[in-house]
Length: 164
Length: 200
Picture 1 (tube, one colour):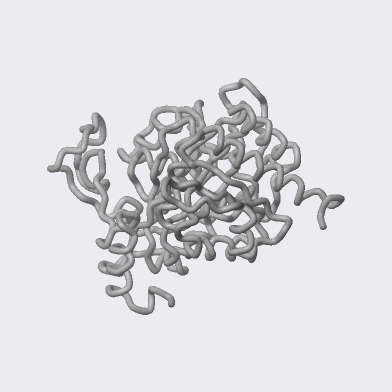
Picture 2 (picture 1 turned 60 degrees about the horizontal axis):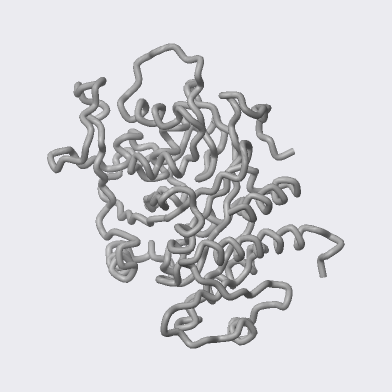
């Protein structure tokens, strides 16, 4: 059954059955940063912590409704590794971009950025896509989906696992 | 060439490692996150994918105020292989109805571990079927639970109708060495299945 055929009914059951793997409600999440990205809120010196007074922001608000990264950029998937470009001059960025950039100080996967900022993957991909397009972040794509990992990579992985 | 760019120099701040992933599948409660935790160098992290109609081809949600969405949590861990390769282990969502996440999870994966819970073998049919159809190499690891019947690997193979070429191994998801052995079995199987001379 395609769950989208019955919005509002199928998901309630799914969320219950998943025992915490899914939530019934439309995924608002708690931002750790300041105000609404388009507000006049503090652009620097973000309040940290998860105080209950912080606003709940629906995920796509941060992306201004976009659900996909800019089409011009490289494809970002869960394990694309991103890193902040070191040679960028200071320039104004919205708080959530700054938080991402801070995490990208060292190479990190898209999934880790998502987990550590408690932002859905889809949202992180859009924001990272912006940063890549602006030259603030560089990526190294995961081995392309259509291409199998090289033999030498597989051998290195095998050797690495054996050392565990 | 797997490199997507020229940033392959080692030891320089600019070097961007290459990431590869292995999928850990199985029914709800089969021990997927336990296995990931046993071998991961970090406490397993949880990322969320928000599923909306957007996932079915909408590029912009402007003006869309109340479409139904749900959140699927994915647990994952990390193993740094060397300066240039990082391995991620992703657990699949426990419920079959989140099948729509599986395509993205499986895309580009090295291979998969299907964790079988002998108390509920039927819960991993879906995973076995999915990876067979995808042509993604996988191994079946029979997780030993306290109180579960001591099945033999051969019995599980027969019950799940696993082809002879697919390894079926016994495992304890709580035990690091056991989980390492499962991963070694998988990657060995992946290399073997890639080698034309060995393909049967």
